[in-house]
Image (cartoon, rainbow, N blue to C red; front, side, top):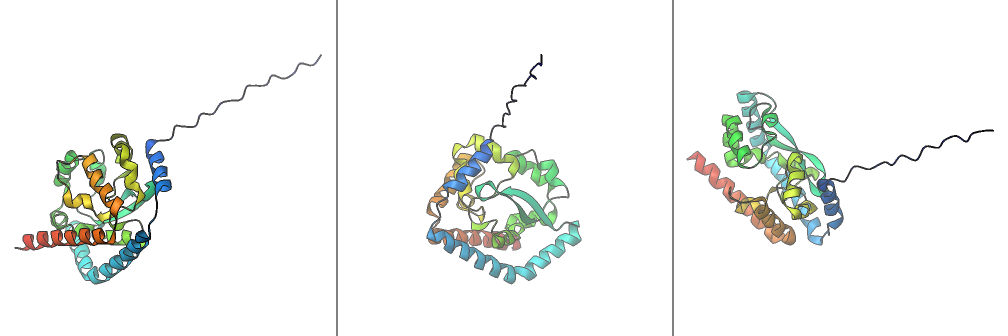
Length: 233
């Protein structure tokens, strides 16, 4: 008499739970409702960044040369940041910190990060940060479509999940490209919470009109100019 082979019960496979960051990125991707003005703003971004890169190229070269002579390579800092719909991209800045500072500063956020960053800053880096000239290479990010001139500032992936836990509305920040400057940056103080910063970002996202875009750029240029000429004197 033959014995029927034993059939093992099917093994249940449990998919790992979806992280909040992944869910928020999907919500942002599906929740985005483009407007006619968005295409216009993107066109202005391309023209503005291209013209600025051409006009500022001698100045950018001098900054790069000064950094190379004073503190060696690399001249550019390349950091991962979370962009629209949660897509991670490489953001460019002039290097303002000592080599490998990103590794040492990685675990910190907020005021603790600000304090520790000061100890890692090079002399040229301190001047670049004070005038925001270290941000100029992000014009490349704008030109290729990773960023916009105006929008919420991009955040490091390491803190993305944490902020999603702290601020339930954070996914709404991901429906537009991150910006070189933003509404929150013009109003921000060190005492401001992430929720308060988010409120300013969402105010811009809800409007994101040509008029507001130009006002933010004008206010940013004025702030940079006053800081530069203030340091010059």
